Length: 389
Ligand SMILES: Cc1ncc(COP(=O)(O)O)c(C=O)c1O
Image (cartoon, rainbow, N blue to C red):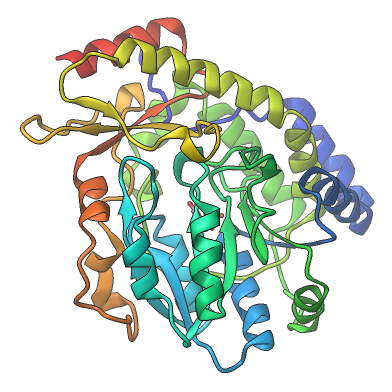
């Protein structure tokens, strides 16, 4: 029997789809109910929603720019999703990069300090693979440059930093509801903030228009819920035009409203997030225990800033060992290159000749292991055996 594990995944159930349909009938009431859940869960006063994480980030940057119109540079980790610089360029701003320490996945302090100055609108901190990164450091450096802090928890919903939910620790936070995230609603992006001035600025932006219809979304969700299962996942994986797992830099994405159908699904998923996270942590713990002592394989990231929510388990493969993927086991690289490698595509990158050795190491030597609920004990044994070879 053909079986393939997706690198990330969360089952979408028939009840989730039913909830989506009920919400679609409810319309704006469903959006309001989901927003209220988000405010309660993350302890924030304001929530804004969009069709994707990158659309939400673009919107957030436009809102922040209304508060600081003299600033146009956004500092990003040199290793992160290509969606992040896509959003910055979509919003019309310039990118500056700072390096990451591969062992903590947090910013390298000197590199971060170099990336922030009087032109910096915001510093984006991404909690990669679910590991809370060093928000204290980012807040301190951003404050010296008078820049805003964006707590990008697109990969870390449910995590905590010093007892507070990640995503809620900056001037604004970001979550993604796309397919590979902690919870998903096919797609979607969330901005959270406690700042009244920012909420008013976001309100004043032109309203998002368009969006996919409920019928189309329903069938997409139905296909997704079937194809994410290991018995069928080989099918979408083998269709190159779907570009599953590809890292794409594309600043010309659409910015549309989040729909009531998606709100219905996301609401149910948010309610089961603690249970889902506990499951992912259990798989990661088991894998880590069984991987300890394998020469040349070391855990990347560390829990020094809070326990990871284990969206994926990142491991570094030491120099001298080939970095080999096993897509059938969901063992894959993450982003193929540091952001400095796409510098020619980034208009007016600040300090385009900078070096980012940590980001280069992550792009070259990192593998991620799956932690989701389709990973069986037998899969874990096969993953460990694969990495031992
Ligand atoms: C750290 C980070 N921020 C933002 C985004 C953008 O989210 P979306 O895929 O929903 O556009 C992603 C997506 O992978 C991400 O990983």
